Amino acid sequence: MKKSIVTILVMAMALFLVSCSTEKQDKGSGSTKVKLDELSTPAEESKWERTTSSEEVLEFCKTVAENSGGRIILDDTSFKTELGTPIPYMIISDKAPKSPDEVDEDKGVVYVNCNIHSGEVEGKEAMMIFAREVAQGKHDELLKDLVVVIVPNSNPDGNDDLDKNRIETQFTPKLVGTRTEGNGLNVNRDMTKLESACARTIVQLMNDWNPVLFIDAHATDGSYMRHAVTYNWGLNAGTDPELLEYNRDVFCSRALRKDSYLESKGKVSVPYGNWGYYYSGIVDEGWRTFEDYARYTTNYAGLRNRLALLLEVYSYDEFSKRVETQYECIYGALKVVAEDKDEIKEMIAAADARSLEREKNGIDPKRDIVALNSEMTPMSFEGKDKLTVLSYETDEEGQVIGTRLYDDEGDPYDIEYGKPVDYETEYWGTFVPTEVETMGAYYLIDQDCAEFAELMKFHGVEMTQLKEEITLNAEDYLHFGIESYTSGGAVIDGTPRDKYEGHYQTLVKGGWVQGDKSIVIPAGTYVISTAQRFGSFAALMCEPAAVDGGVAWNFFDDYFDSKDGTFRANYSNTVTAEAGTEKERTEEISMPILKIPKFDTIK
Image 1 (cartoon, rainbow, N blue to C red):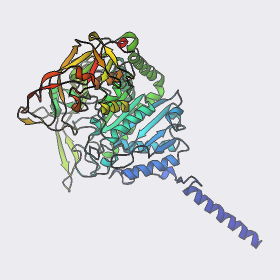
Image 2: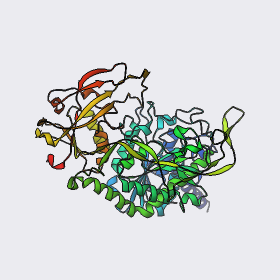
Image 3: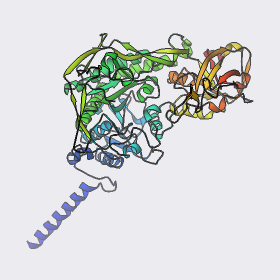
Image 4: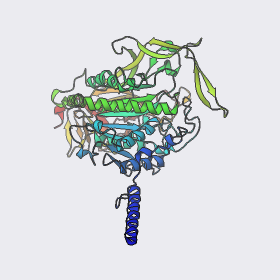
């Protein structure tokens, strides 16, 4: 009997130890077993006093992935910043695919990008909570229809560079990261030139996973209002018009407006904007959106023929409320994609088809245009000429009243507003081109402009190189007649130019000129067709006078000569170089880009 009792005790102890071991680690897998119900994010653990460090983000994501039952796959090795910091991303579904090739064709892929401006931490925190819930099995029904690619911390170096007052309109948490990445670049202005590893990560994931929707999570710039969030779609004037309209009027409305998941939580959204010209705060000047430049993530996504959703939670709200709002916005958008995925895919397929069919139909000068630049204009919204913006009363200067309250440390902690007022205001939310070029069927790029060619390939733009030389007749091509250009650190009208995102942009004025002679195009010349999925984006990048094109971002600065063996050697322009500056001079230059108007010119 005594022996039996000892045996039972030994067996019980063994079972207990096995149980403890199992709870701590999966044998042979190295995965940590935890009770997900007891797992908090560092922000939750701190009672919303601080945000999560990059190392903590990575460890949290590892933990939920290891305990997700195959619902989450974490990749923390594929992408790193220039400083070597991992940029982790999660692949999430009811059964997470290991690669894009494993995605069920019936599912919709959504890409959620967070913390690109690392002081705007709400998306990072919200998606960590969402991932924990996924691991717990709380979203299996939703994920039957979706694959969600989440980058919770797309700017990890900025995330860890903590300080006070990084965002004037955001009071909690007191310490947050920087707007820029480790090398001082604003990643949300880098989507065309792709100089930062963070921007290249975004584009590579877009290329790999081909999402139907790209979401970028931010916080507002600070106009006083009673909306929990502002939002926007892809704004660029060159975006496929039908897709842009669907994105704005159908998808965004279902995701964030009437009868949306967000409104069921008692929160009201409004399209992105700020009061007045250049953030003046003056209500009578209307509610105004941001620029439509392709350098912004969501505008870039729209030019790629994909749905885009910018989310900017109200920065004056408490930290915990901002995270809650961001969660509800993203979750609501996911629900709409799950419900409408077939319709969304049809809209995207139709936009892609319109791009591909250019070769069969030819270039339509009314539709196939490149907006070199554009201007913001008022628009009707949801069938009304005016937009309703929920805000507060104004002062004598017409600005919304808001008085900051300070704590014992001298830090702002809240805003004291005037009386609530609902304004019916002009909504400056769309763009019309001010300068337009008809898209080329092809753009030819001189073979020594390899850096630009590599950039375009990274974007996913298809191109070829001539295997042998060809001859173009005068009527077959257009060359760019340069009237003037400004580059470098020029002084314009006595004022030195400031660098913008690390660049003195090259400003070109001129226009396309019909060829006047037959020319030889050498073997090795790059050929970019606009009859491809990214045709509109490719045309924008190749147009010399485009505000966001390759010329503007200095990719061609070293190739304005008449180098032997290139097609640009066939012509040159006598121009005013450094126009309007103290260095103004006459110079002979050539543009290493040709435009081919018709598809049957090159076989």
